[in-house]
Amino acid sequence: MSKELDRIPISKVKRASKFVTTGAKVGVNYVKAYSKAALSGKLDKEELDHENASDIYNSLSELKGSALKMAQLLSMDQNVLPKAYSDKFALAQYSAPPLSYPLVRKTFKENFGKDPGELFESFSKSASNAASMGQVHRAKKDGQLFAVKVQYPGVANSIKSDLKLAKPFALKLMKVKGKEVEPYMKEVEEKLLEEANYELELQQSLDFVDKCNHLPNLLFPKYFKEYSAPQILTMSWLEGEPIGEWMKKEQSQADRDKLGQTLWDFYMYQMHKLRMMHADPHPGNFIIKDNKLGVIDFGCIKNIPEDFYKSYFELARHEVLSDAARVDTLFRELEIIRSSDPDKDVKVVTDMFTNLIRLLSRPFNQSNFDFGDDAFFTEIFQMGELISKDPEMSRLQARGSRHFIYFNRTFFGLYNILNALKAKVNTSSTKDYLKLAS
Image (cartoon, rainbow, N blue to C red; front, side):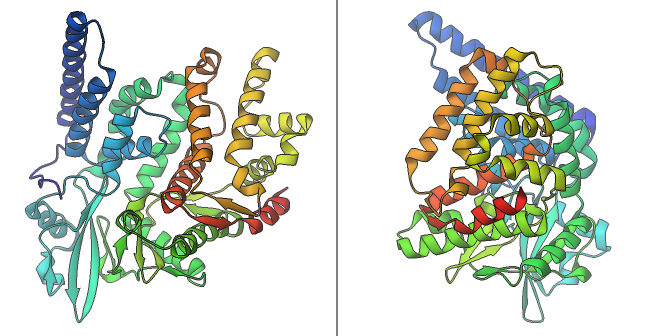
């Protein structure tokens, strides 16, 4: 675990000054890099990326909240950022620097009027896990083990201002224009405000567990209202091994396939039956116990509008992608094609998105899919590289409904975990769902 933080900048002025200081550090890194390049005749882009990624991540780690969450969001799509950034930002998923105990105690006092020791028989002073919005402590009472999630100070109140301050960094890294991403930034802002609402998360967790508890091979914590508050969320402690650690060890193909199938079926059930989804599928939210999959965080739940659902999943069928007229209609419904687009732009966008969707929806159109096949992910990476370097596509970026943000995040996260599992998955039931969606 990283060194504990004794304070978090809470005021807008202090948080803004942190962003300014970080920008200055990045500027110095560029000066050093280009000075070296002038002497050697070659710019070491990899070294520059590593230094910038480290400085930006360290600053975001001190700020916590939506600033650090932005790093986590960016790290989930390996094609969006240079590798140095995505690798460093991925730490926000499960190993951010934790808060010191006095700050945790202060949060308890503000929420319950009591110290942790007055609510529980024992309470670990050190965090078991620290992420972007909060950290988890282990507690015990009456023989029951608890996982107590404590929100970082100032998280909820700083979301809007933090996103405005972080936006220039994000736009520069993703190479897009500010005006084009406004609807998506708004979507992210709304979701982050929801994630900062632990009372909402409690209700979402209870609802989600109730609706998914019957699914095989899954484990969920039990939630405790009496030990929860606006900035505190308490659930039963699920013993097990983080899926990231489990995957690093020698495991049988059968066990990998079983967990991969569980994960796939879990997500297909959410999307197609519940019209909602756990939109934060990163390794820090899953643990393994007795070859069962434990799901431990429901802070980010995306409800799926019916019209978006039907258009999105109709496009996932390869036979539909061969129908040019239907594709044009669906692309307009999903805001991929705009009414103001000239014919030239319509063709460029249609060709690019048709090829991209055909590739990404390949698992949906087969009875079985080997997510351990790195060739599939190489194709995705190469297409992402091609699009990012195409000047026409750079001009036409930021397309589609705002709902794509969390759909894309969910599928990239799901695919990445399945690839790391090297899982072979029976996807035949998905084809039936797609037919019903049309």
